[in-house]
Amino acid sequence: MKIISIIVEGRKWFDKINGNTYHSANVIVTTNQGVELLKVPYQYGYGDQYLQSAFDELEKAGFVKLERYSSGASEAPWRWAEDHKVTLVYSAVDVARKKDLK
Image 1 (tube, rainbow, N blue to C red):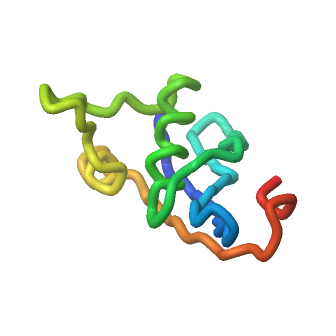
Image 2 (cartoon, rainbow, N blue to C red):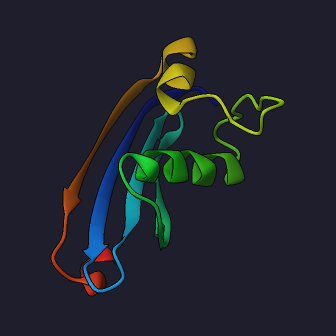
């Protein structure tokens, strides 16, 4: 199976009371065999963490295999996409309520 593109649509919510940021995402994977939709469940993480969480879900589903380093870090999603000649589009919006993460 050849992956053509990966689109990650993230949502982020800031919990003002506790000072934490949470995210969720939808991941659309287009392959030469069709289109798949994956959901990234609500979890802690700020900044572009939604993108890493999306690639964790892609890895669980068997779409990608990120390189793991001895430091515990993993290959950056954009690097994986560049190396495999896959179009990667990602963005996130801030939502006002926790329930909007679903």
